[in-house]
Image 1 (cartoon, rainbow, N blue to C red):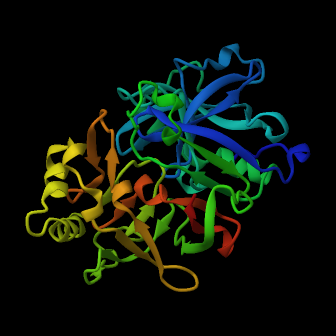
Image 2: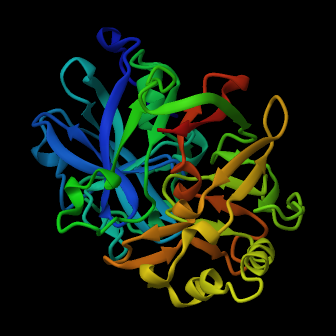
Length: 392
């Protein structure tokens, strides 16, 4: 059964604005949490495409943590570009500082003892911000730390689910059931010699709020419906390239087994589109002599000196909302990433899934970069909505 968090009444109703950066994961954003009795600072990937809080076992050893409680639960999680196997322990996790600090005891924390190469890169772990249905664990015959169970053995355990960190935080009275991202980039800007100090590479994760941060956005919010409580599943209805006719996006087929045709994912630093949709968009962007984008999609990047953003159209994503269709715009500045992968070059961040996602598109950071994006799970029976307001 799921392990619940202890109540935390002193933190009730707090809103915590956490500084985040995209440097350590070369595009994906990370923020700092403090772990265990020693309050060890861990830089973790912030991912709405998964649900597990996991720490690299080379970084965190629960045997040195006085507050850690060993369990008989084990987990194995696979992502689009990596995987790990680990033990579940309960320990204290704190996030934020000063008056905005939020501390929680007995947080479900996986400690990865087998992981694929570069799974965490320069980060120390990952913080999944999706729903409980993605936080699967297996009950084993005995304690799972020190490491003893291999992948095949774990799969033979009894399947269960544990509550993700943010779910525990909200249930424990710490924050409202919403969080927000404020970002500017989907790849590192290498315009300066010190990317960490470049404000383009910085942003915020706001726990428990978003609407109150009027310094970060302008105008009204648009709401996109979330249609399933695994990933942040959405319905992409059409894509409009500049002033051309809308490209209708089909609903998923039964054969694909996808619940929806798109998800919004902070852990993806591109727009990874269904192959047919990608090809249609590329055709409209590459008309006449303007083939730079499609060429860059194939070659990786080009010199910024040859790129004239003024001639590139905005790409509008038409999404299903609770009050009608919502139009979200990705500007050329967001689907071209300047000074990436190095100064003086630009990278296109629109890709084909090459048929791997079976009709589903992943709408990653380039969609979010133009907006303050609030994942509000407090409405619609817990499924929630994703609210977008133009970023300042």
